[in-house]
Length: 588
Figure 1 (cartoon, rainbow, N blue to C red):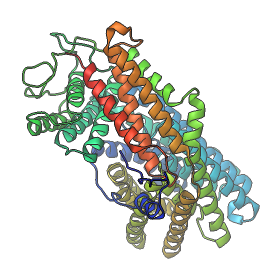
Figure 2: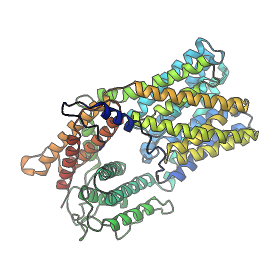
Figure 3: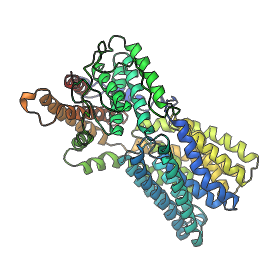
Figure 4: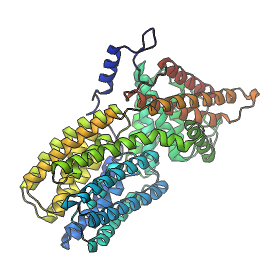
């Protein structure tokens, strides 16, 4: 877990300690690390097709303006990347409606306010953009929708609100966005036809790799981080599979290759929390090999490696195989819902308002300030400043905001060079649309692996879409983008540093209390004579979720300038006690 500065004997942190803490929080270290994401290639192909199919016919029909709004609707495919198909269908339907509404409302506002004429109309659009940014940030955080999320919703609204739109064009623009969103929805669910369990396989593969990282990790802080990632990945795998940890020893094995592999991950996780077992390097290699086979789209059915350390087999250090069924999906969901209630204290709604309201407030203030300054300075395409501020503030703490600012700066500079090369060649509308589709593919393939590399393609994508709507001079377009980006990044950073709050510290306190309550239930479940309120497996699931939330809360608080005031020894002790209980509650 992150370590806050050590106080002196009086209980206060000295000036040098505060300086070191501020430098640590503001460090951009890790901003350019490239991660590994299974299924990224096929997801990027789907995103490109979802954009191309509705947009290219419109360009061919001589309607490049409508094609841009269809492209905006097609950004729906970015959401719900790791969700099972049934839940993905519901989530993307809501996102598709939100994207369409963003374009429709933005277009209607453009007609009413006429921001291109300046004056109060431009101010009204800036204010509306800021409110949409804050609302989108709050909703995406509450729904735990990762990725670019709120930035894309804001982008769709801002493009529509700043266009030279007539009343007769509002309907067609909204319809084009709806067609693009529908295309994205269909392509996002298309994989169900030939790989219906593909999302579950990918999330299980991620759990296998996370546990392999834990087996190979060194002691200390590195092992704590690896243990947290492994726990979160295994819980996510169980949630995707609609099951939970095994309930007890039996001679049978649970049905389904992915579920059996999730059980392997769980068994190794709870037995490897403190030290790697004998033969850990070999086990880690086998886990990675299995993960590669599971994520390989060429295999229609999951392929199991026979040498995996299945729980219950001699020599693995595990128990016998769990009995069929394990924790019913309803019981596992109930355990996760219970820990969600504990995270909130007495009122889940107030917790969400407390934890997510401040990042949303930062987003609102940052985008509003950047947009206002852009209007006052007379920048063309001034909404780019607001979007740049939103991209920087689309984060969970000051530390991640600094990382995003570094990534955004590097990506924007590289993206401007790409845009200069493309626009300098003087492409026609169809060629321009094809380049945009290629950039969308590159964006979706890389942004989940590294935000900086994704931003390299976001910048020319936005520039080319603007040029497709209303062709302008190349140098003027690039100048507006560069100035808007610099202004937005600077305002975003300043806003993150000035809006200091203690909500992250409160979240740590509540997570610590939730972890203690879950541990108490686990203690009772481990001693049947006491008549525990929860079965052992549900107590395990609840305790594992609690320790994941504790780690996330502590990490978020460590990234803020406001000190949490909680002794790091208490956090480490709570985490250690939780994993000891998980091991005691393991079957066998």
